[in-house]
Amino acid sequence: MKAVAREHLVVPDAVVQAVLSQGKVEEAPHNLYNYPARFAPTFPHEVIKAFSRKGELVLDPFCGGGTTLLEAMRLKRRAAGMDVSSLAAFIARAKTTPLSVHDRYAIDAWLNCMGDEEPAAPAVDTWGTAEEREHYERNCPEDAKVFFKWAVDKVTLLPKPRQQAFARLVLLSVGQWALDCKSTTRSLQELKGEYFKRLRASFEAYFDFLTAAADANELPRCRLASLRRVINRDAEASEDEGRIPKTWLPAQLVVTSPPYPGVHVVYHRWQVRGRKETPAPFWLANQRDGAGASFYMLGSRHEENLETYFTRLQGVYASLRALLAENALVFQLVAFSKPSWQLDAFLGAMELAGYSEVYVDSDADCVVDGRIWRYVPGRKWYARTQGKIPASKEVLLIHRPLPVAAGGPTISA
Ligand SMILES: C[S@@+](CC[C@H](N)C(=O)[O-])C[C@H]1O[C@@H](n2cnc3c(N)ncnc32)[C@H](O)[C@@H]1O
Image (cartoon, rainbow, N blue to C red; front, side):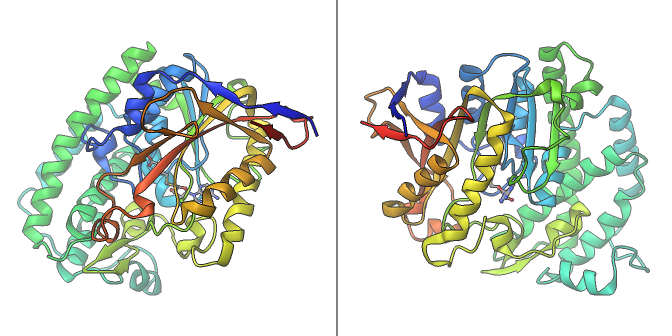
């Protein structure tokens, strides 16, 4: 095996500051749904700006709510995201789907029609089978259940699928605001008032984002979707993924965060009144769930040594090599429940997948052993109540793929 020298990378201060950012995510369209463990948008923004060029492909194999994709589009790059969760794919797609002034008229007219209506469950439930409804409505407080049934029924009256998707995305944000990690419940009137308020305000803010992105790309707004692909799939065995146009490949940059090893993050449910979980987000997004938490976390966090997690992580990155340029860079933000051994296991999986680590060339305080560490603000209540736990620290890991012909690397200090 050939020894490779440790590579050091000059990382602009803007990137370091973006990694350390503690700001709340308030700008549209990122704030249209607060995807669990999402990036501060400034992180992918600065990384994409510094380490890729206009027109190049940026890949996020664990794209969640689509933060990387949105920032890539804003910066005139092409973007491809994969996620095993149909809910995440729905959110990422809805957040990157252009809307027109005609869509605004349609949504306004729709809101005006419903303005005086008292929310009530429709006489006949048309969504799913009785068994499915029982599953998706589980642990939903009564008023929220009635409101969701009413709203989901009304959404189907919007003429275009993209309008329906936007209305569902905003409905998801209202559901999250009302239920997720909340101990109090909201009345029907409060829920309806919030939905109407958010729909109007979100449309305006989203439209401004689309207009700015279209100007930056010198494209009509309606063509923006042609800059991105959102693919609902397991990122493992993705080497032959045909939905990324061949002319976009290879990708120059990966900006991502995988599920964190051993860390409890609930991506696919809301936690109602304590820790009771509801799968309602899938219902509101018109997606199917049916999988347990480990499906979204590369394996069970309770497994000793997290063997499944690290084997699957290796599988994902091994297959991604086929989609990456030889000199591509992979930026990942990762947290660990037990950094003392999981960091090494993570790096080991990357090495076995055929990547060599790249170290940050800086003597800033946040850089330890060539890696930038940060505290994560505002993790969900189960982390907040315990104060600064290992999982509230994240590290930025940077890698490059080794040439496909090369064997596994041996790192010399
Ligand atoms: C930390 S979140 C990503 C959040 C994202 N960076 C954002 O800003 O919204 C990790 C995501 O990985 C997804 N995921 C887990 N296993 C996967 C797999 N095998 N292939 C693709 N996505 C997967 C989860 O569903 C989750 O959405």
